[in-house]
Image (cartoon, rainbow, N blue to C red):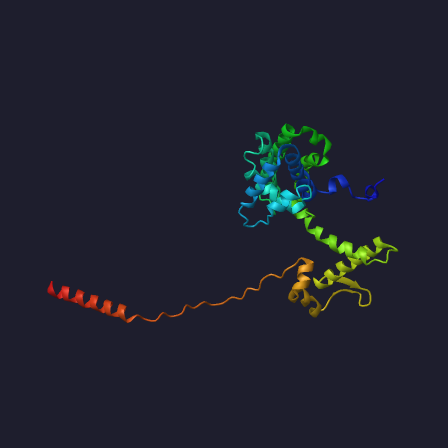
Length: 290
């Protein structure tokens, strides 16, 4: 029996929103990529796709087309996020109409999920429902058995309820926590092997305490019987040390100082002054003559 089911007030099926990294990138997009590589593309098609991918405008993207084609079975989340955005522009001639519709439907769904805020919830849910239905219909034409075998495609239908309850799913993405894998591994390496799980939990708790102190958090002081926080000198570390800012994933807001801008006076050109004076004299002569 899962111990989560015994926690009062917690319903794991309702209180855990769909996670974008493992459900969309490592789920839907990975299924499409695997299907195209194993069932459709030849070596010549992959070579052509690598050339097309490398010709992509890299503004805002990090793309290594040769690496992605060479290690096509070992891609990670960031690779699939790039493919989700650009694959529809490069598969002409090496995919069928149904496969192209599937790739395009996956990209349209990704555009609607990777948003930070929602202006009109009802309109957004209607558009999201259509995008999910289009993706499932496209999967039904290309690989219908995968819908029955993979639960990640079934979870797409639950995104609507999660968005209405939790808001934009990008706020609950766990992709940023993948960087903790290196910290977790080092904690395991330097453990005394007697109780590695306890040592790792203790180390992460210690790191959270440091983060709480540096960010100005409060704690209860039993001696003074009041809530207290770290001194100003300790809190300034987070504002002045880029190393701590990078490790904690925080950057201080830029300090804007109001100023008065005064343009530099241009040096007068004597030639322009002479031309202006001559035009005035000419005008006066004309008036006198008339």
